[in-house]
Image (cartoon, rainbow, N blue to C red; front, side):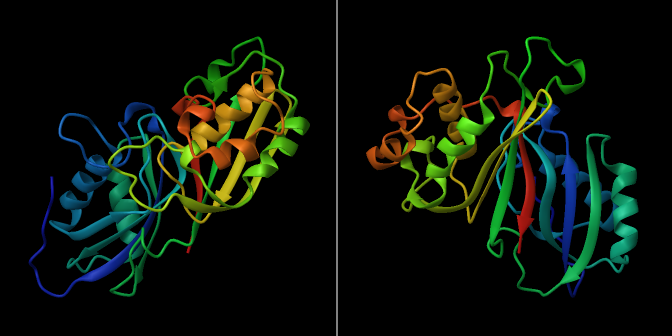
Length: 254
């Protein structure tokens, strides 16, 4: 569903939202599934009547969460940016909240002007389930050696062709080279958090990186195998795609 404003001069707005992805089929509007973009657009139209060029900073898949998701959109309505935040939150479902809104240059684009992103992946590493993390972290009962995995993960850092760490479909064409600036594996009690920061990400890239580390943890792959997997440029060489529930878009850099 696309809404078009023809009310005159347009203002370009930059908005930051958070969302719980459990009940959504990702960000992008789909014909037969509820998405974050759909509920955001409906709330926006109820307030300002119409819009143009609504752009999200990234794709997120079903069940993936966002601590920081950025949107640019053009509207003609004169509502002050700070008032639009509270107005949107009056109409958005409880699973979505608008944190910030401000005016930006007319040519600003939430996706194309993005310089990088940071994702985190949460793993509840305990034989006992945590009911408060159901749907928000991967329950993983096998012992994880976070120090060993952190060392192994440093092979991801740098500029590489990540063909082996991408689910190939019509979304991905051409250049599979990305520059990973950071990958860390840290533990706090039974919660293990993997953090990865890069200039861009391919489809399912983070989840495959995590799944490959879990294969290393179980001894199915050697700790030093990531470099060789990268060189193969073959999805079959890497580990499985980790479940969506533990993945969060954490930060977006401009």
